[in-house]
Length: 220
Image (cartoon, rainbow, N blue to C red):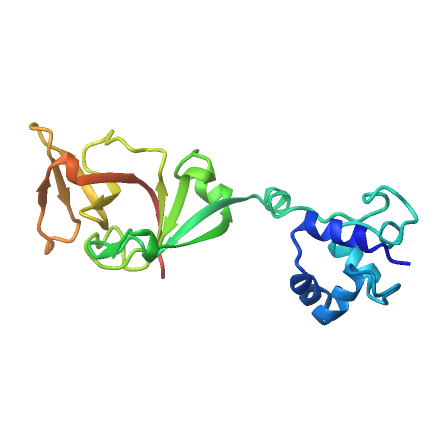
């Protein structure tokens, strides 16, 4: 007989609601609801439910007291990624339009991406938690960065440590990618690689450094 309390306990531990577990099992929410409320003494789906809850049917039926005994616990995404040589990097979608992209939170969509650690190591040894990838729009940095190229940003670097390096910036509430030269008077010269885009001299108080552009993956 199914122990309803144990099912509910494992659902909470694994972050399942009745509806989400029902979708994963392939049954109606009512079916799961009957199990959780003790109105169903058995189910042909019990073994599948147990796998999803990372335990066994024996535990859910009260035959053993250890939920991990003989249970198949699948590896976490992080463990799988480590085995495959991948690193988790946040993608900021459309937040860095080169000269015309809002950085305001309501306009920014962040998605976790798993990318080859070997590729990242060609550009930086900074951990993935401090990296972002973007696909900027525009041609102000052409031919160095083309429209929608994949750009790797190292957010651990927030100080201009090289003249005319390429940086991701928040300038006046807009996202931009520019070369930066620190002028003798302390102001910044923002330069585009596209000769048709004019340079700008700005006060440091008007610029927030998002991070250094560590690498570019060119689209073909």
